[in-house]
Image 1 (cartoon, helix red, strand yellow):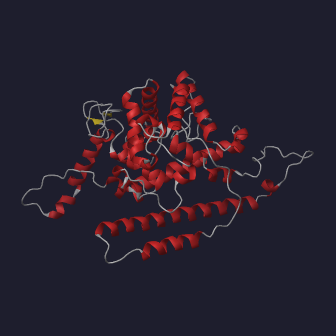
Image 2: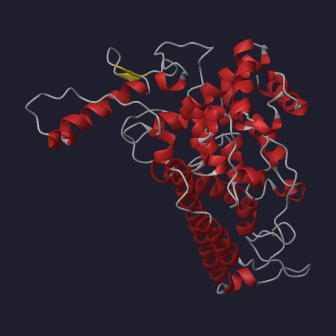
Image 3: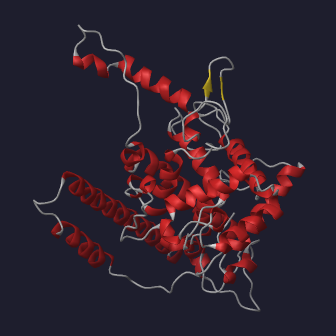
Length: 402
């Protein structure tokens, strides 16, 4: 499910005073600190400062990358050559209007696809690390058609005629790869502390004659790893990871599939809030409080106003990977051999099936997510809120893909 594009071609070239804006925001935060503040208030301010620094670093990194791309293009005579009616350059494609592949990536259709719709594409040629393995089954063809419709829905109108161009596909893939890498780093590095805050992890029994230092030895680490392995569905009898009997997918952490609890674990909601709002947001999401940093966020960039089926399915996949032994995020785990691509499709299919058949658990699931992530919008129509068009679009998606 995608949220329709309401902006949204790339803005004209300009040179924003990023340092001035960053400095002003940092100054405001520092001046807000006072001895009268509580420990909690100081902690929240500290997190805001860290988030601001992180977002600024990401912006600077992106600008440096863009500068390198522009310099490389400027130094490549073949790319500076203009095509005319009487002299066409073989093997080159005309970008869409004033757009370059780099500007298309910054416009974000690839990033938006990952955040709202799907972690991988079922379209495109084999060998692309973002695309699914090529195949010809009916289910795979249906998946491709569904994703093409989602791409068309999130795409700026000016770019839709160019969706079959080679440079377009590459820019889309680059945007998806960039978002996947950014999310993986955020979940396991910058945002980890806020994501796991409040998560209960059992400690190994300590013998009366054991030194405190031993509690941090390999035995303790193995206990924690074994605990998390089971939290994400490991079954000793089969030697495999379950798809649905996963405590970290259920609000009550049951190890048996319960549709009334499925996809409601706080970790899933925290993960998506971290993706769309930054590393501070997870600390407030279960309090039904939306925190919007002053820095630019994915929610602001893409005008995200409600939960999508793809967002829930992706968050379920992210939580499994986050606590797995896999070092890098890919369609198949490099250590566990978990098939994350298959897992995402299965979760998405289950959600869409529930919506398409108007099953109560599925409609209440979106009410639950919207109430926590978008409390200022009064949830969604399916949950008794005020935003009717969200559910109309969900129903349209079900008619297309179920």
